[in-house]
Length: 343
Image (cartoon, rainbow, N blue to C red; front, side, top):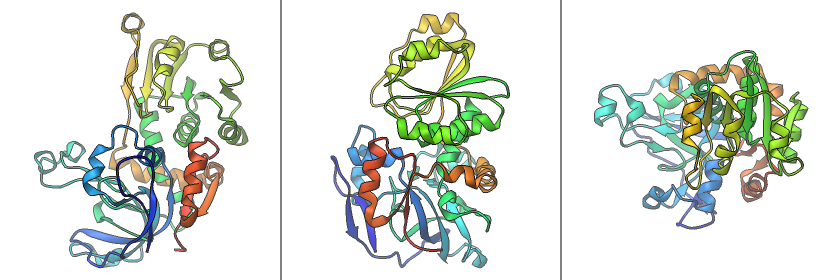
């Protein structure tokens, strides 16, 4: 079967033909993939930005960790009726045997592996994952929209970390899919949302199409001038991965406000700690959502399918994946969905 893989350190990914898994491990299931999304992480891996060196020991490895599909085979210790279930899956797999896992604290597993990073991913026809990582999908949920579950859990965790509440004024930095999803979830909580990007016309237009009015492209307007038109923000959520924007936008955060970092940054950011202290501001990091939040995100997607389809800018066959990577890299795409087949 065709697979998009990272085969060596350095820039680039490539297609290879690999064998379909024929031995499903105990506690795991074999999923026939229907749809898989290209993530910012996949772009970082393709470009080989710092932070992914641990992948060298598992190369060649199939990429892809945002996906939906159907369980076709099950290993021992998996209920027989799992076969035929439409699912998505949490890509972060835990070992079950380290001290943290044995204590029931899987979030601090010391041997965690990510699907599409530390173990084979979903940019192919079939992927194996632990059954405990799977979440059943409603029959009413479109498979392309279901493939948005993992990134939307990242968005939900960011909104929760920022403690977004109704009536607050929120700035979202970065209108890629994560920023778009954060804006949608913050709005659903009743917040007033401003989204800022740079050279992000296509992505900002998608937000305009789903009802966002306060959109800033700093390639067109001066950032400080544009932000000065708003009252200080109750919360700022950074999803751009641009270190200089942290210090540049902190002055627009109100006293005791929360600045949440979601973007993956290529280098450290410098900030004025004295100002931070005197303004009683907080800086928080946000990453993966707990497993308990996934079903709520699936329910949100199921109830807002028309809205979420607006954020899928490209739907391509796996064979056109490299064009999808280019579209995402060039800020033309919001979310690229790759189709493996019908389920």
